[in-house]
Structures are given as C-alpha cells and as structure tokens.
Length: 95
Image (cartoon, rainbow, N blue to C red; front, side, top):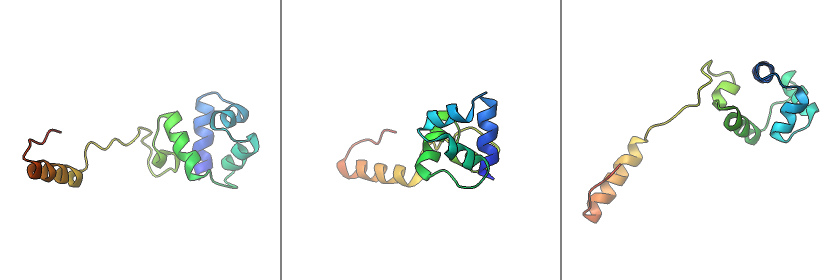
C-alpha cells in the first residue's frame, strides 16, 4: 500500500522514477519495487523522504491522509521534570 502513496507523491511532483531515486540516494529499481509494493523503503529512507518531502512518515505509510508533519508542541512529562529540576535549583522555570 505504501507504493501507491510513493507513486502518488512522485507523480504530483512531476518526477520520473530516476529523479525520485536520485533525490533519496537509491536506485531507480528500488523506487520501482516500492511503487509495486515488492519491497518497502527502509526506516531511514522513510524518515529522509518525510523530511525532504515535508510530510509525516505516517502519511507515507498511509496511516493518515493529512500530509502535514506532526508537530508535537511539548511533552508534558518532560515539562514537569524541568519544572521540578528548576525548583531543586531554586530557579524559575522558563519554557
């Protein structure tokens, strides 16, 4: 199923399989295999793809139809730890 999304993205950018392959440092044969769902891109390639294409890995994996990358504002647990550390130091916590 990921092959359908990769082909859709490539075509929407008016790129050949060769151009798409060069963009990610893989062979044209690799792109062809992805698009035909014969093999999946590696995790590293998926992350690079998402970064270069400005979308989320979830979008590439067809877990969402929202192409926008997921932006996590702040982790509430990390916020609490930082707040506690500031308290221990006797300083004010600044976000």
